[in-house]
Length: 65
Image 1: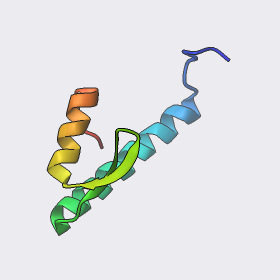
Image 2: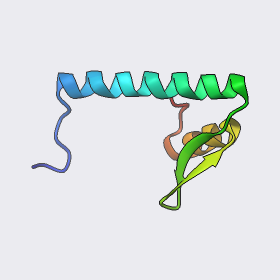
Image 3: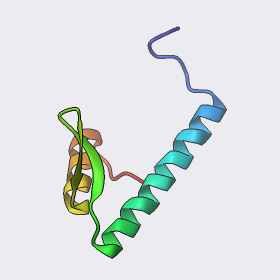
């Protein structure tokens, strides 16, 4: 398998659905004041939504969801 294979239409659709779902969870947790689970140094940890969004921006340059 190629390292940089083109995503299939089904793969792109699944990725968009996952991004929307993550965005909904983050927004819900923000409203309720709950932390979100993220990977930090290879470990799952709970962090405040603001910190999770900062980590996402730092890593990808854009907001998830």
